[in-house]
Length: 213
Ligand SMILES: C[S@@+](CC[C@H](N)C(=O)[O-])C[C@H]1O[C@@H](n2cnc3c(N)ncnc32)[C@H](O)[C@@H]1O
Picture 1 (cartoon, rainbow, N blue to C red):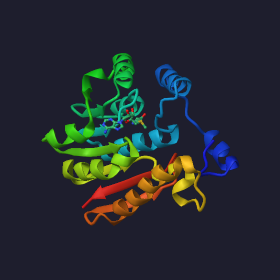
Picture 2: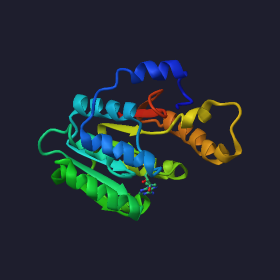
Picture 3: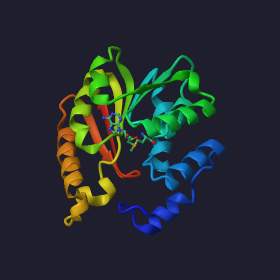
């Protein structure tokens, strides 16, 4: 249950959820059963809409997990577009490969294995859309690399900026104190980034949306 919406609102929004195909349903069930954090379905639908609106040729995702959003994005891209996605967990890489193989869009997905902090400085070509969804303590550095790799006019999407409601909460449980501190510090940097038009949207766990000027 979300700590960002009132339960009645969440239930109401969920009542409009569109049906997904078997693979997407299976991936959601796998993530739930195995405690793999994947993007909320609301945020995934939002990113799909962004893809349809902006028609990006090159997409970069930082933090693949099991390739849930990777596949949803890839399925909405136009011809000759590509998704590059970076993941460091061997376990998640194995599942991501399995699901990408079943997705029907594997030919336009490139899974880059390794730590994004060392992979990103080696990437040369810029991207039209970047989706940052990795460990929160690394957000600042990954964001800096993303800004270098984002084309002018490009869009960046960042997940978890409301951090289960704790980013704006007056009382934060000790288990979440450190991560909440990281998110709060990051949100200031994100919002004040000079060459980015930014907003934080209450979708899923809080989506940061930025357009590079
Ligand atoms: C929240 S999950 C990603 C969910 C995925 N983007 C989706 O939409 O379903 C975060 C993932 O980022 C990976 N990760 C965290 N820090 C990373 C880093 N520095 N480089 C590459 N992957 C990283 C984790 O192993 C984890 O699989």
